[in-house]
Length: 113
Length: 117
Image 1 (cartoon, rainbow over the protein chains, first blue to last red):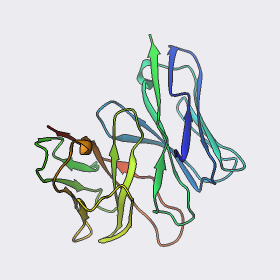
Image 2 (image 1 turned 60 degrees about the vertical axis):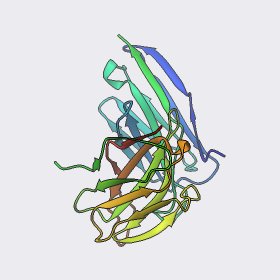
Image 3 (image 1 turned 90 degrees about the vertical axis):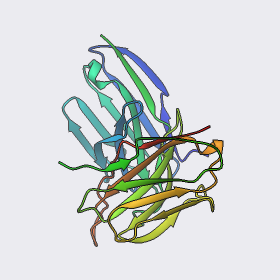
């Protein structure tokens, strides 16, 4: 079973459009992390959320963690071709940090110039 | 800025051979993780170390897999008697975990891509 569900699986948008990627868990998210991956490369850390209701922004990317700490969203404003890649959410599903860490299956983003 | 380094980047070997991968974490990080990633999937947790102690192992880590971090710095992941199903990207990550407080984000290497012929 998949501990973290991401939607959509893939997204194709025109440059300049806004988009949202969701990450949902049936368990409490004690730490939620967003990463970006380009094909054949490692993961690049984007943002970390730990408190219910927390919201963080970096440049044109905003991530939120809901109050119940079971869902997170990643929003990109005015998308650019440089935003293309695979976005992954990862989470601690236990209070004991460092125990098994789970990732979603990823969302593949294509931005058409 | 020295990030997480993994060697080799690519490994092609015949079924039944043993392979060993190396990971050099960010120097001040006390935690080191190994993951396996197949095409179209997110990384799957294999194991992690706090300093030199291996604290958690996934069920995915069969007895053909062994990981070490002998001095709490670099780590090796060995796969014995490789099978075609072992073909994947093997990712290493490191982080700093304070004695008290929340874990910090994991920083990843570029991975070792293993192909079994």
